[in-house]
Image (cartoon, rainbow, N blue to C red):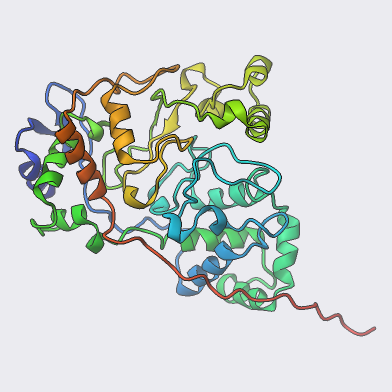
Length: 382
């Protein structure tokens, strides 16, 4: 057992029987072990996309630049606004003009720690996430060759790409690398997170309610079963019986996107014709056992990243806790891990208090960069 685990177990032991198994945590009466929560380490950096100040500054400009999209209306920041928890604060993401999206826009806060991106885990890196968003038909809808040509008519970008990547001209592959590098700077500051301060030795960082909530999290409420490790996510896939958003029953544009996504992701004709359920992980595996499963999201920064769930169905943490306390909802392949909890009203309040302690004291805000203008390309005289 590590010294960190020993301290952690001591801190949360009051009223909850926990044991350590191979450095993890186990709920009393269960043989399963789970990695304990802990402060976030520095984000992992891929060897083929090292960080630099110049690269992240370029990535920041590109993150804000609407010219990386189809009709120059849909930059990354449209769906990931700093003032909205680096999401868009809506139930369903806005989508490309003339369309709607069909899922909640997840925050990019702490996305540097995921090895599976998007609700169905369809890509495995931020470098892979960027083109999926910029070029996705109901997201950025950008043509890579056109976006690349736009960048080549912006002298400042030509200079930046030359400095950062050594290329004579901007290339979209490198643009996505720069955006990914910038996103790796959008992470929680441990000094501002009460839970992290507590784990790093400040025993006054959590109040009595939050400490009781932490015990519930690791015990009676069972949150640790899926929301474990420093990220508070095991990055696995579960069906919870989350209710479908009503807009898919009443709004034609949402229904159009729903059916198009079914078609584009290659489901069978019967599923396409019905198209009344987001099939989640099934789109990747085509395994019926994966219908309605979605990747576990991190519980960090929940104070600033509502609404919650893949379809934005819950606007408050109280609603989320009530959903789990009732044993989730009904639906195919529902996990056995979700069952009625029997939490009292005071216990629910304590659990919410602890969940909020996984967020920074204040939101991570950022000023928009000044974007460089186009200039006509000079041609040589004949």
